[in-house]
Length: 202
Image (cartoon, rainbow, N blue to C red; front, side):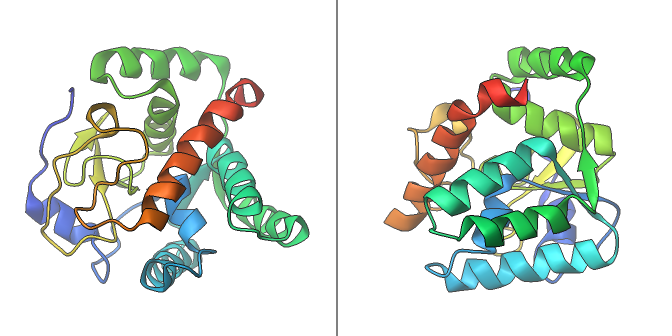
């Protein structure tokens, strides 16, 4: 799979309540949870985590994440587009990775080497370009490393590792053993969003 374990001690450094060390790249699903009142615990944790990093100048996203965030929260969570636009405008004032054409080729190579989807490879490549010390996501294998970037699911208890990746689970199936239907629905939504907006990104 091209991933390798980074050890529970590495993951624990970045788990909720842990010490912030270096830049942190936030995948789209973490930002979506900041507007998801149907999952209050995850909403609160996502808001706390992103806000702390943003205030410290350590939060990183990419144009891909911004696009996916807007489409997902307006179409599936019912967020007013004007409100979502305001949040997007605030997000663009922070650290945002903007791809050049050559980096797309690098992402393709990562996709071929690791067997993760091309769109997920763009996420990982953006984190690499930013020099992120961690990639926060609910959609990759927690406790592993992709492209040299440690992957952390901030919603898991510290030290817990789930050996499930996007490429070996059914579409929409969650990393979490007891994931709710809402979690699975949001997972499918994000997958569809990445498919629908792929031409716009290039």
